[in-house]
Image 1 (cartoon, rainbow, N blue to C red):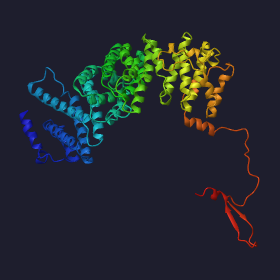
Image 2: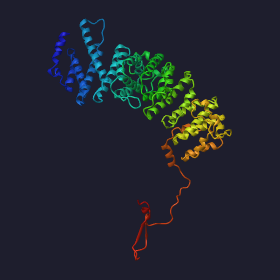
Image 3: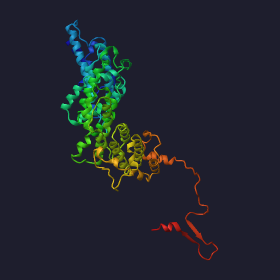
Image 4: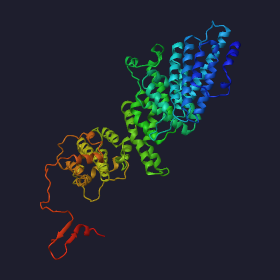
Length: 564
């Protein structure tokens, strides 16, 4: 072995020793020579050169260096693949001492090559390079090679890839709480969403890694890790409780080596631990919002015990109350962002209450408190009204409770936008049809005072005294400035023979849609009244003629009227 290394040292020309950038032709020549066992030291030369290229690309953009780096990665992968096939990266008992030394040396170089590729994925270069995408492809292809010779999924190598993707320096947190890392997005689009085994083993050892990061990294770094994580899982997983259906899903590694990926309980358990651990990270408001938007569809169905999210969801549902007595909001937008969190929590809470026996005390009291003036100006109002309609659908609810919701919504309609009022009117109509005991509010003859008995400041809907009030707000809406709303509100003057409104027809209305409706309206009278008298000019009125002794008099009546 010593003799071979001396022979190979002749390859280290002064050009390489000085660290001068090589050409693609030099790289190709070194790659071809590696096929000769006496030229194995070319591995060292090429790996050293790749490290130098990466260090230079961190500070400046260089297309030639990038092209050379891509060529080196391709050549090294090709030659290591050949050595894998020849069994020169695998130790056996029958090998002599000299062969073991050679194999150990090759394994060391292969590990160093993988380490450089992992560093390349994790590092932020001076620009987004194809070299980093090549590194991702190469590492995942190495997974296939290792699996074909070890006959098991190479979890250690894959977990190293997962770690650098989640804790990489590429990308920043976007306003919606997600990550824009181009390497991560390529991994998701080309690999993660397509192959079930990559999804299964993604979570296999992740809980321990996440716990380690939580105790050692700063909050801003943890937020970036979470941004990368939520960007990955926001796409629906391939998991299916039907084993035959799951076995039909594509896998990156041959299914011959993947017996454990069809253990449903194991996957759900690891997924549960990963979710509960990472949700304990310090997140931004935008990340909470993004999480809650997908939690009930992308997370809860894949957990072994969704009840583990009860504390997380109830804390977020009470977030607004927790901050009312604290310091004032820095601005109106921050207050609005915080007020949206409990609304977005409703979907997941409903899922837990419906399917997992969650008991939430004073649920309707909290739901009632979410009805405020900001609600009708948010983009999540449609989602909220769908759920409230569901929560108030039971005919066994107290009439005092339902009356409070009806009265509160009617009061909010007085100051809401036109598109918001369009939702409230059919919503109230449906509630009155569903709960006939509240009909008295339309025409309450028992009111003796001109003061409204409804207590708008009462937080408990059972104690607002709304049932003894009247819906005078609806009478006001009949004189709304927008004719469509005024016409819609007059439905309360008619007998309640109309079937329930389909709320979906009203939930997505906006000012633009209202204007488009008016613009496309067809009127019965198609003709328009016109002036019957003809004039030669629009503004100038001439008196007299050219034959008159007096000069022609010209009066611009309209212009004189507007003269300053």
